[in-house]
Image (tube, rainbow, N blue to C red):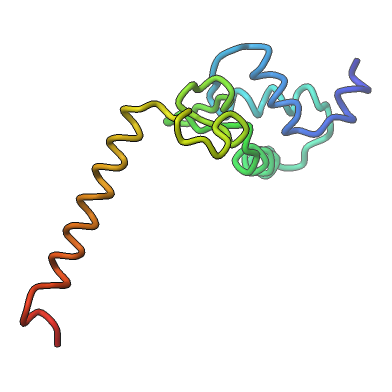
Amino acid sequence: MTDMMKQVSEVELAYKILQKTGHSMYFRELITEVLELKGRRIHSLAHAMSEVHTQINMDSRFVHMGKGMWGLVEWSPQQLSAHSVGDDADSVPSSFSSRREKLFEEIQQEYVASAAEPGERE
């Protein structure tokens, strides 16, 4: 099993760890577990942790939960992927859509009003 772990990337191990635990983890705990499973020699722990942290940060499957906690996007019902939404705006919850449309209308009205005010242009 350790040979298989050595062939898997660090970010893939982090993904599998989070899937297995089923809850968010503090980044140092997650990365330490990844490095232990990987079993490679590390010259600088800080450098190795920053490398793995960067990989996790760049991978769209992970989401920063705040205060150093990382989880998986698939756990968040608020996160709508392009596959689930598609081009159909009706699949977005109506309260979200109506709030967004109202905000957009208010911004447009303010912009038009400010552009129409005489004496403001120089």
